Image (cartoon, rainbow, N blue to C red):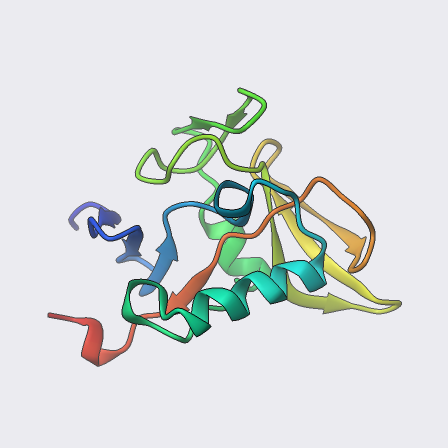
Length: 144
């Protein structure tokens, strides 16, 4: 099998193993602020409104998709210069976590932490130091 991640040169990364396209930077890098879950949704709306990289179907990853990026054999530095364990094809300097679309009772949502390799549940409107890694499904039209 070839390399799992491919830099498309347009701010996106293909994940060949899971048939996903990730945004190379996270929401913190793009907006210089952390995001609660609702702000992360607004960030996605903006990406889709401007058709980032030509697409308008950017979304939050599921818990499993977010976790699939974690790989303790590789790392980049986050905004605090700590290691986060994702492939170096992604841009360093972002947040250390990603909100997910996996919802829990009492206004909760799952967050995956790339520093530690585990998930937690946070209240969706708690002020926090979290970010979002936007993703989309690769369709047959994307395969050139």
